[in-house]
Amino acid sequence: AAGQADGARFAEEYDRTLDRQRSLKARGTAMAGMVSALAEERRGLEGAVTALSSHATAMEGWLGEHGAKAASAAGSLPAEELVVGATPRDGQLAKVAADDAAVEDMLYALDGLLTAGKMPADLYLRRVRQLTREQFKAREIMRKIAAASRYGDTA
Image (cartoon, rainbow, N blue to C red):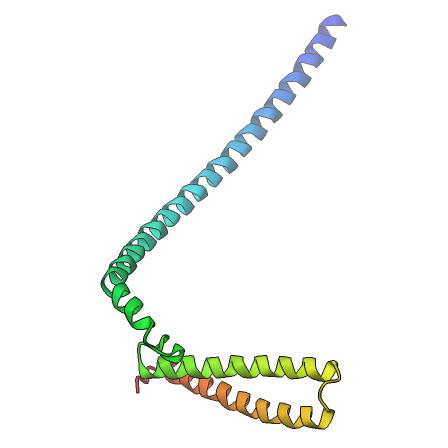
């Protein structure tokens, strides 16, 4: 009877050990997959670092060449001329986007005045209608510029 009990305990221990071994093998396989995925991600990140490093070097070179000219010219130019687009279309887009943002700021300020009771409702409505028309036109121009850019129109 004692021999059978020892044999049963041995069999149970053996089964637990086999289960543990299977579990460890499955975890090992999962971890190997994770290590492989991490290695792939690391290669991608190293490539991105290399690309960004070359871009940074190019930008530093450009700044070294053009930075002094820009700094000396900045004091003599009006603020509107400090930001210029690479193409006339880019310049137009920057101006229209600035106009759109200015209208948005005005609408916010008008809302504050109306809420504070410092502006009559009829004047508020007239001004909001006028500003939203301007904003609509600006956004339509931005949409047209984006569409033209998308289709490769370089005019």
